[in-house]
Image (tube, rainbow, N blue to C red; front, side):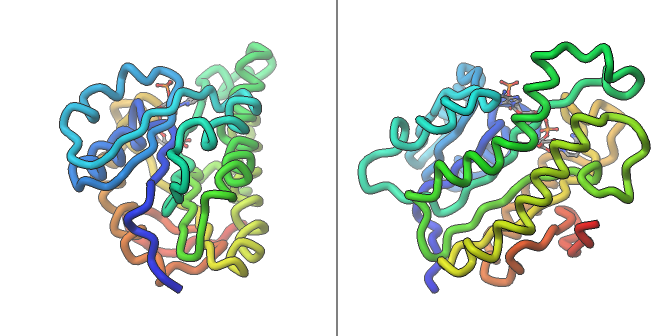
Length: 235
Ligand SMILES: NC(=O)c1ccc[n+]([C@@H]2O[C@H](COP(=O)([O-])OP(=O)(O)OC[C@H]3O[C@@H](n4cnc5c(N)ncnc54)[C@H](OP(=O)(O)O)[C@@H]3O)[C@@H](O)[C@H]2O)c1
């Protein structure tokens, strides 16, 4: 089983936070990247400094049709995806206290982007994946029932969807030589995590890159804590 490291690495949510850090670090390494976002103007600084090929694909991951069309439209003929990082996430503080006031559009976005988009992107990417490809799904401790506290119901439910998808889709993918894992990124200082979070997204991005570089040691369907590299129980 070969390592697919020269093909495209796809990163969702590359415009801000963890995805932006991953994209910046990988672009500096000269890796071929396909960056997915809905506000792609924010990717200009990465494009300016990159030494490798970078494709920018605009998509709103709350829209299934955007996901269906993304790879045939964005990738060159014959391209393969060596690594798909399902990182994009969407969150609302309103959910902490009164989820009943959450606007319908935000209910759909939180559910889609954190949950179904992970599955839909896996399906959309499948024709471009090959033996040795890796799928990394960025989850959250809120995916795990042991961390449910009666708050953020849509976010918890959507991340739990992505967790269940990761564990249950991994065996069939592995039979094709494709690994799928989940990563708990911890609590990071990003727009989502806020300024008081303990973890630096640049360090979390470096830890995920180290994990990706040792992909053959990763157990398909497992969930890893990013900074410690320790496997965490899925429930
Ligand atoms: N920060 C934390 O402490 C923390 C903790 C646990 C898990 N996580 C998870 O870690 C991942 C990265 O989080 P982060 O803190 O880096 O978040 P962030 O700074 O808020 O960035 C979120 C990214 O997702 C993109 N995104 C959101 N909705 C989208 C949509 N409808 N279509 C396309 N892209 C969309 C955003 O794009 P735009 O710029 O277009 O909005 C942005 O690039 C997420 O999956 C998050 O749930 C974060």
